[in-house]
Length: 236
Image (cartoon, rainbow, N blue to C red; front, side, top):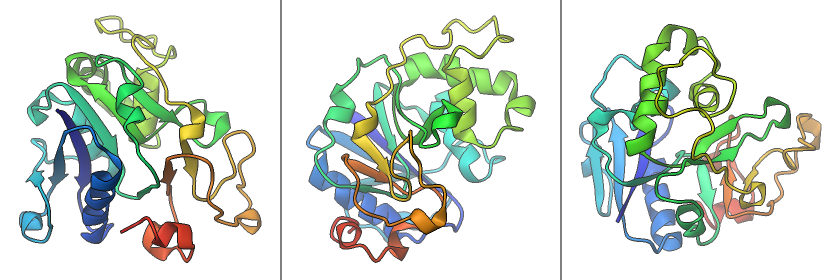
């Protein structure tokens, strides 16, 4: 049994995003899992259908995407293998391979769609806090003031799990230990062609369905704003 996690904080998304993510997961993940939604909406459980556990994060001084960092904290009490997806993804086919691809103690994540960054995109992650509480959470807390100057959670996670960290010698789990990124062809951007030839120019966006099991919607437009049949037929 694995833990599937999502984060629903604030008012950026309608509750439909949690429900649709749950529905897609039931269609496309056959591996037994607990569905856990970390949220600040105290009545969310009354608005959702299905076997969904709603719980708050322990720390209340984080906003927006910074709450995702708490997934690696011991207070979340996430034992064993954890798998995370952003709310604004569309699952198109079976995703069991995202769980079985790496070992239980390895960190897997999709690469960012901006090829120049060489970092991760935290929309899709698999980890075990037996390893990552030390590396990611403790590393984040140790240099929180500096790391929160970065653009967002995925930039922090990228730094803590690559070889560019040089000033945290006390971490037992070193950068790049037990890191196995997902193959690029498993995910694709809703807006950009691929990681080597992105369509940054809005005039080139055609929103055609790419190759992969999961479509990642980063920034605007969001899934509910899409007119593409391939989105509407799967995001439900």
